Image (tube, rainbow, N blue to C red; front, side):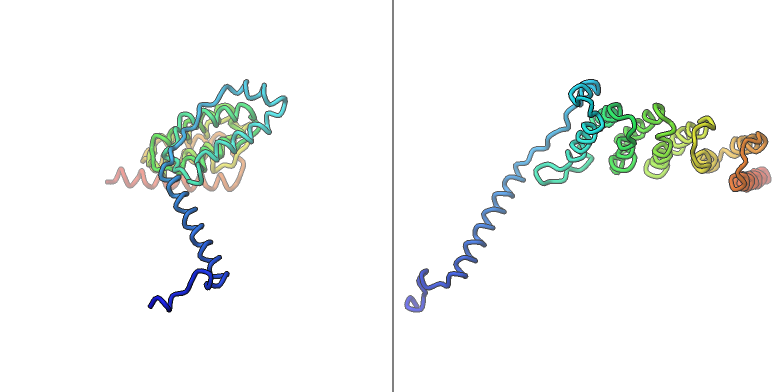
Length: 242
């Protein structure tokens, strides 16, 4: 039996090299696993005041704001691991997004992150925190953020199933002055929510006043309002009969 065994010197060089490579790979992954098992999550640090970041940017506020935004976005990737958004402190996150917006008010990106990225969590408080941030940004610049406001309305309606809160957001959009340019569907979200909340009388009065005001000239919008009004009147009539 012993005579049939090979000495190490008799093993082909390519087989020996392959074995050593395999052994080294095993050691690497074992070491990496131990590092990950000892991984400790690092919390997002509180931002400094926007004025400080402006001062240290030496006139490059836009560039620094984008770099800081990238840093915030990359915070959920630590030591090669993706950290769930549920681990993030949304109070600190909200402060970062507002600070970075104040550094670069021309950018819609902080509001975009709030409505499209950081709202993708199964946590009601965190979603509402993002909705509150969007609302605050909307109040700063309605023309810039009306679209994010409609997305906040949809978050409340579909993810949190909070129609009264969604209606409050929709009313803020609908009550914007005509100087704020946006499509009719954004203002019409209020009518749809009134209908879904079964507040038919309020919806009827609102649509009637909109039609009688003469301010709406778009034929498609007029057709939508008349069809909606007819549907509401039919539902009110059925309710009275019942």
